[in-house]
Image 1 (spheres, helix red, strand yellow):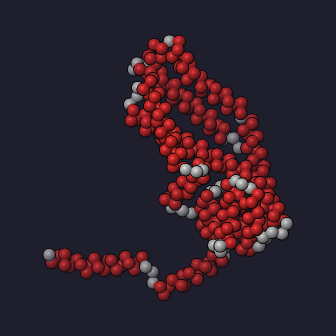
Image 2 (cartoon, rainbow, N blue to C red):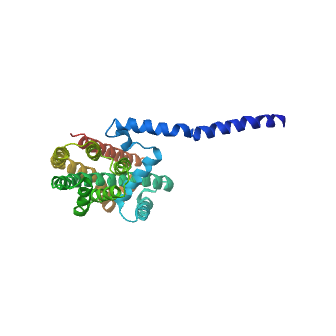
Image 3 (cartoon, helix red, strand yellow):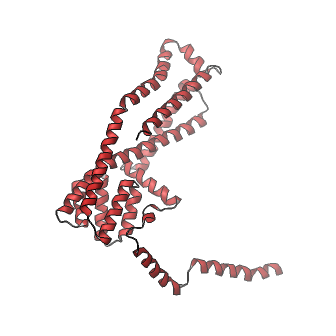
Amino acid sequence: MNIWLALIPLLFGLGLLVYAKRRPDPRYMFLEQVSEAKSKELYAVDLKGLTKSNFLQGLTNFWNVLKASLGKFPISKTIVFIALVNGVVFYVNQRWLNFPELEVHVSTTILFLFFGVRFLVDRRRKAFDNDFPDALNILMSAVTAGESINSAFSYVAKVSDTDVGREFKDISDRMRLGESLESIFERSCKRFPYPPFLFFVITIRANMERGGQLKSVLGKLIRVLVEARNLEKKKMAMTSEARISAKIVGAIPFCFMFLLNWISPKDLEFVLFNPDGKWILYYVLISEGIGMFIVWWLVKSIR
């Protein structure tokens, strides 16, 4: 009992220390704010502040990107997708494979979710690469005509009915409400964490805070983006024959298995259910996966 009574002052002192660390001295808060403001005045743009976030904020931003890609009712669409995948996997497993149900459902759900998320993220990035140069071209035309930055953002939002146009509308509305530029562009960069958009934000903030030749910088940025888009289209056109050939070669074993189900079901049963024949199935699946991964890596590695 005496030991617990002796620990009470110690615990109370530790509590006061934690509270003092959590609540800084108000006498120095104003001086710290002033010094921080002066240090920020030395830079036109806080580069790290555009994309800096913790793990939970990163997950939230990633979910926002997925919601924007899915459109209306994203949770319902995700649930329906998972249900359809598991229904098809259950039918195929009961009809042909007879693998352990729990392992099959968990692995296929994770696999299809991974490829589904990858598809949505790639589709959003492609849409951004196609729409962003056009939006910048409209923005530069408005700035050239003598419009302010805020009016130019609003004009792009009226003309362009895309994700970039809606983002420009959000930027314009928040500027009119008087929100700080740092918070506005930080939110936008988390929704579009792509290098062209980051460079565009840096250019706009530097021009609005320090001034400069915005028209010439936007013109160079538009030219670079259009050239990059044309190079991407040229790369896809040049590799289209190889990609189609790889897809056809990858589909041949599965088509042969479906054909074998009609011609000689006993041979297919040997491959699917016999312990010795399952090694053939494992070899086909592993070799197909490795081959498609190599083709995908070769296409992505082209610069």
